Image (cartoon, rainbow, N blue to C red; front, side):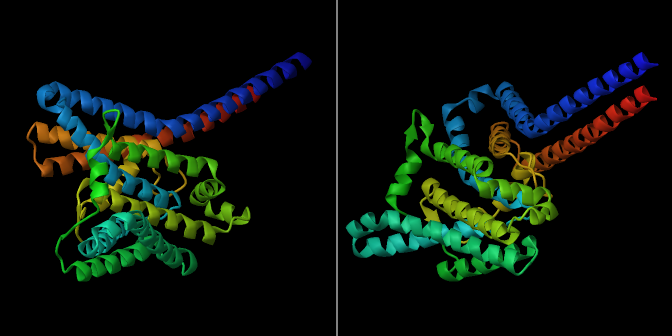
Length: 362
């Protein structure tokens, strides 16, 4: 009898260790599965279009276009990811980016018309002002959401409408010319054959990754998104965290406006009008939980590159923009179905393990 009890305890201990190990493995798998999945899709897409049109798709000009087109939508998608990580969303990001670009273009061109030398000297401060515009717009969103408790989708929708209206009144609906030449020069430069724009995109992703994983605000932001009640009872000032998060997303929106000018030396109220839904698609494809609490920066980077590769590939095989939009939707649905099946399998695994343990004890 004693030996039977000892054997039961040994089996229970072994089963417990297996369960603990399994939980740890599943947690690590969840953290990295989004990145792995997007890497596989990216490599698969690249290989597919390379086989179909190798002469066009592998052309250096085409590859350079992919790396130049990705950064501006990629930075907006990272900003969207931050807002979604808290369980919210930011619909005003494109309007913030355009307001930042319009501010820079207007101030620089007006000053350059009177004194080109003074405009060149003031250029860093004018660009910095573009970032400030983004930060102020983000703070306004944060005030509406954190202080007045307005639902994020409605608060940022209102901000988007306000900024879009101001931009149209400001520009008269026309395209503004005269962005700083130094920004245009950055857009034409490269570092070790890699476009500087793409390097800036990677550095931004790296900075946001460090912010999320190494700073107190980043960790509080993740806890707030995964469990707002627990975050509140843990002593976290949720209102302050939300306010600071939306300021950061606004700054990233302002930075995206600078990237608009680096790529194209003009600004207008309707530039990037198709980017808003695309940024949400990229954030979700990259592994961001729309309900908040989980996201991976590098998953978003890979999702950005994947959609850019698919877009370029469709152009290479002469498929239309409508077919590209259909493919975007199909990829999004397939990834979300895979996420659903994966999460259901993970929730079943611990239950199955506990069931086996109870059978052994009986």
